[in-house]
Length: 157
Image 1 (cartoon, one colour):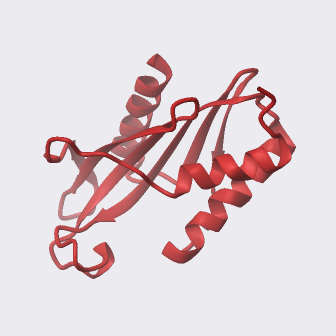
Image 2 (cartoon, one colour; image 1 turned 180 degrees about the vertical axis):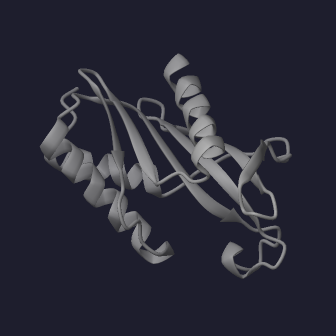
């Protein structure tokens, strides 16, 4: 889908130019598209609730019709040790994460870029990390957004 590739390129460009990316959900529906910055995106425990509330808010403010694609872009820490939280991993890396949900199929995929900064903390590069073959994504955030949206705008088909 060309919309996804355009958003990936936009996120990379903004990250390289500004050096940060505020958590944002891009919502493509059957009647329109919107992008919503999620202010004050919570701690790990609160993120699902934040996304549920964002879904309700978008359905109330921006009715986009039937949801088709959800794309969430955010900075995050990626840990190298699966036994600890990424924020506690001394070998963690800073990443730009782009999580994509095809609402019709419920397939999720994720694109990640390691954020490389110079000594002055300026972003100088975005590198795609090597992910293992067969890497699959099943997150909780985009399904929570979908559920929140559908509380207000139930699926009609």
